[in-house]
Length: 82
Ligand SMILES: [Zn+2]
Image 1: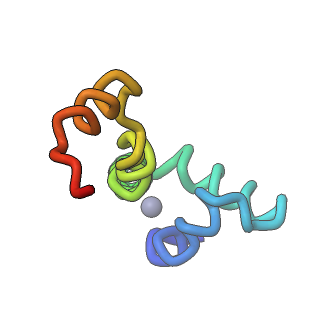
Image 2: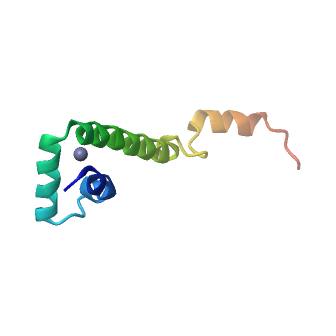
């Protein structure tokens, strides 16, 4: 395996879509190529950042999740229409 092949299959390697023999080739290349170790590291960090950014909206509280007290206070303060 050379560096070009390494970068081409990096995504599959990281996400576990490679057969065992291919993974072994990857690990062998990593053991002898510092450039690809650094590349793998930065690629992995980029993927994590993207996943964190993508997951962020789900961590925010849902719009209807106001405390009950606050909801009641707003309802009391609202002028009655009838
Ligand atoms: Zn390499």
